[in-house]
Length: 308
Figure 1 (tube, rainbow, N blue to C red):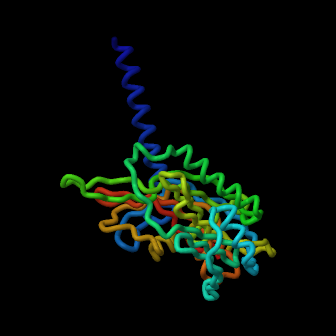
Figure 2: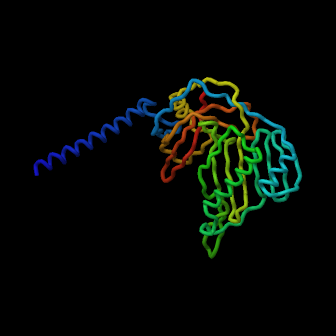
Figure 3: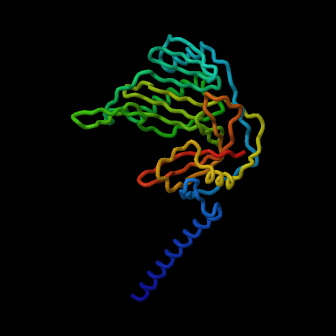
């Protein structure tokens, strides 16, 4: 009996020592970064990942623009989105050509981006009656495959499936109660140049599908780029963390009562500006994948900080 008590006590001591060592290592990790990290709005910033190892230089990616031929726009309209006819007009300040009918709107940009939508709100259905996630993904992959076959997807950019989820709902009042109907499911994709992620308003691919299997909206925001030499990385990961803490989170509206920010991952990549704004080069940036927490809410966001 005494021997059993000694073993149990030893095991308990070992567990306690392990917990103390773990907490000490975490505390040391945070103290080594920024002693501790305090956000610009009074929130606490925690680091739950290691700082990335970064090269001294990174490829310089130049945006390449092309003239948009009406015949190519008509081909995209017919072979990808299934409509013909319509009228053309150019929007020079946004660098795009628009083909529109009373129902369809297709925009093709000089930098390679494509946007399509139907000018009609889809009629929602009960969520259990909607298409399966598997079928919606199949429909979206079919669209992406057709665009690639037409040469409309940049050959040096990889587009990888990320997730599917509800993208629009319709609220109706029935028998004095508010009932929610699902209008579209959206498939989302991430963009990469090699192993480096592209992030921003100009690096976004969404395919929204209705209950009838039609494309309600397509966002193919990418930019044709080519590598033209290299550019030095002048901001270290530690300096990027300091900028994040002092400058805030850019365009991210983290919501009221922000208390904690947890950095889940940090990687080197490129920030891509909006497709309708002129941009000569993509911006090398550290991409912070973060969880924002407040009382009763939490949100995930990616925040870019310049690496040069």
